[in-house]
Length: 268
Image (cartoon, rainbow, N blue to C red; front, side, top):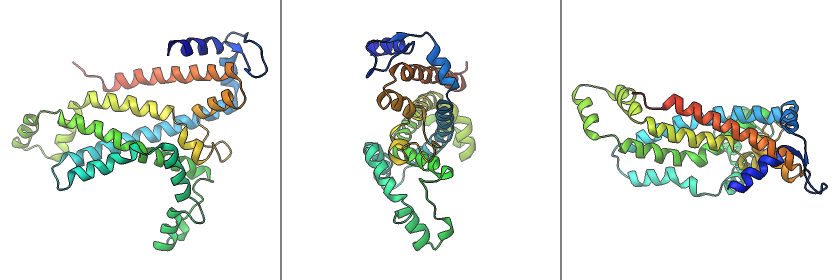
């Protein structure tokens, strides 16, 4: 890991097209300055921020609620837990292709159900061709694919809470929601830290979903930062510029990890 990290750091300070240039030309921090003047980079950064905000809030909320539901002792609980976890083992590229078919405007399953089965034709959409719905579709696919893993992490956190504490709260007359906000959530700060970091990393490094579903379209409305870095490196061969953007992404990840830690850390 050390060599590519250091070498890409050096490349980020150079002008280097590995197809046309014989060796990198040192230009200092020009690539970093150029990135923040590049409207396509700003657009990709904005799209990534929007995706991260929606995905992070939705993923943690849905996963925590599912974990609370699966924590209760119900019939067929093993089946429910397996059903929630199964999507994580499906290759994301394959899942993306399946959702492309499901979201097709003319013969896709979603519009078929909405229009033909439910009779709500006014709600049918060109889901992946409209800027208003394409990003939402990408978030939904990501949630489908990763919520199960986060649910398992939350479930493990719930099972680590001593049952004596919960039983004592019930004896004292604490109801369900009071128990959640007063006992369960404070006791699960380490779990929220782990899940928050993992979900943030997943969101900032999102690539397969927009690449397969929309290829960054329509009109760049779903082009994310990881995808823009990929295109500059492997489509345009601008390794210096791509490395600089990679380091910017790395810096953003480090800052957000620190913010996440400060928010959910244990307080004495």
